[in-house]
Amino acid sequence: MATLAIDGVRWVNDRVTSVRWGSFDQTTNAWAAPTTIVDVQQVVEAIKSGKEVRTLFTLGGRTFLGPKVSALPYANGHIGIEARVQDGQIEKSLEDLPAV
Image (cartoon, rainbow, N blue to C red; front, side, top):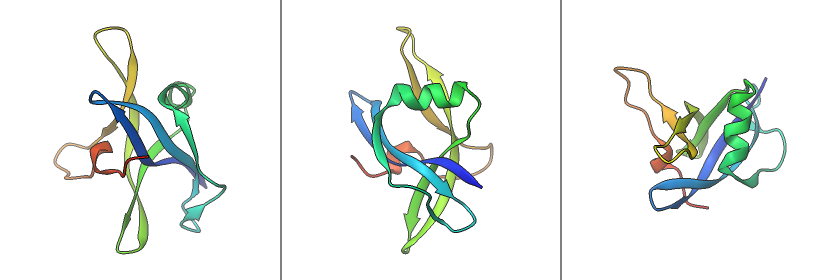
């Protein structure tokens, strides 16, 4: 089963503006296709359409799916993204992903 996964982010003024993402196959633990860098709005649209988007981290040479990503409305009407950590869990966040 493939999941949309984000493995890199671009920040401007404490806001994610772009991500590196792609379809990640959990059964093979590998990208199902090459990753691309897209505007964060494409991620927001994917989330709104019901697709699961997760963070993806490499630790010790192995990849691991991290927290789910959700859309986050800002006060000025802009919609961004954030990683949703379950209560009581210590997880990596978007800030822990490499810059693209």
